[in-house]
Picture 1: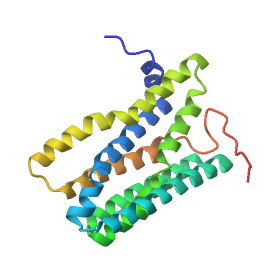
Picture 2: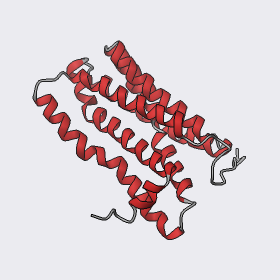
Picture 3: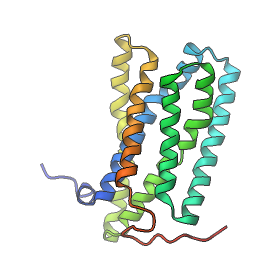
Picture 4: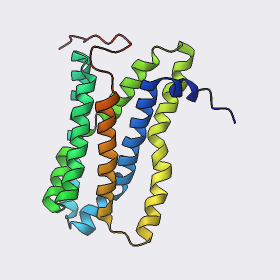
Length: 211
């Protein structure tokens, strides 16, 4: 069976393939944790409705600020690899804290402050894809980018049913964190090993110099 036309340039281009792998891993991390945060907060760590609402408000603000702030810095300085490494580090640290010391206070700190700081990862991964796609014929770019967007959504279709089966078999909710720690570790390792070094990319990406 022939491959879809939009997949061929991605499989031939190491940077586009990297972007796709990172989007799948980030999607798998999000699809694993996001649907169960409320259950963890209320049933496992016994946060009140008001405390959980406050956590969501703070987390949303931190995530938006991180996404916008890190995006501005990446455009100003063209240091996208450094920003992706920092954001991936926050993802790993927040998850690792919940593996090493799960508890109400650590849960609040991880989910309200640390994990939301990784919110810029989707934007950084997609910026990498957009820049790498700029080296391909213009007619191919929309299909390439649409396929990579779908790479982030794919885990939501695959991962959620798997967790439903796992929890139906009696697994504790905290098993989510060791699994997502693996996702975060592989993601950060791929960024470290394969993300093109700042200032040495195949495409032009000069610092904007804007305030």
